[in-house]
Length: 258
Length: 258
Image (tube, rainbow over the protein chains, first blue to last red):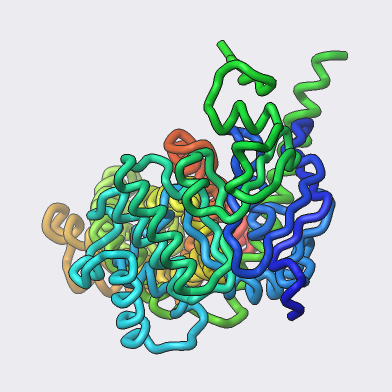
């Protein structure tokens, strides 16, 4: 693979649900090894963008390339193959209730059938240690863990297969500020250790500033600003300014429904 | 002409739902015959569907056999045909009541549980997580359940047949004063292999229906807890209706004209 080629490239991606247009020509490049955060209000299309890249939703038109390989309309086999190099931390962790913690962490390894169950358990325990959880947690069921611990297990699962790319869906939502900072630190640490490219969606600016090399703002289905994290305060974009400072007044009007 | 609009809408929705169910069924069957197979999950589901359903199906069967003997006796005594009780009990149980009642009881127990479990996995993004972990949810969640249903229902029904006939025997011998040896002889003499085989084939079809409906409604549930509740209700209701209608079709195929 050419190093100059973006790890992920979205070109003119459109997605609508019925009459409602959610993505209206999204353009985004994520380079190898960098951490990009997409910010935007609720309903701006952040989750849909992520789901389109992962193949959980099909884009109506446009191009989605991962490592130069076209993923829009890819076959199920191609999608499965590409997903083997992708890790994902879901907003609610999405741990499998019916499996123990270590089985959750080792799920990707066991699915790829590259290691035995015994080896997979050892790797799972090592990954749990990497996110600050003891081996004693391994045999518990996800229901026995707190929200913060579930997020950590979800992170351990995302990095267990040592992916090239990791997606984070609202990683700090629903956590107290201290636990949110712990998760942010873990995201920075683990993505660096694995050497992965990271794409995160969030509306938590503290989190975005901490984990991003570059930030993109999505508004009304389009990327309206994309630049280095340190330049976001001088974006000269009224939409970005309003969002990052959390002001009710500004060009972004929140629809209030009775 | 406005009154035609809702009729048209209902018809189009019906066609869409039929198409969606047909696609789901085709995909599920394809995954049942194409490797890889998740033997650990298949065995787990077989135990869940077969072993854990035995108490409820057994109780249903024994009381059905007892009631059948009692009702037949009071009815047949009017024209001195009490001797036919053994035949009525064994034919009713093996051909009809064994498979149908077991199917309905398992629709309530297993169909509802499957729909709720898969529905919860859908709304908590666990099914999306499977996809990102390079695991096809149809192959991992749906195919093993359908295979287990098809394989286990005949075994459960065979046991229910024996228990049901025994229920009739208990009433006939200990309450109505029949000779035990004569009762058993009558039971055995009038029973043909086709009576049992037709019941077991029905059981297999009902096992397919129950698991398919449980998986289909759970897999397509949306909207949180309420959506899971609706999916569970739909799974049980649709499985029950399909069981009764397929029972007629299979009876017509096996016994019409004989």
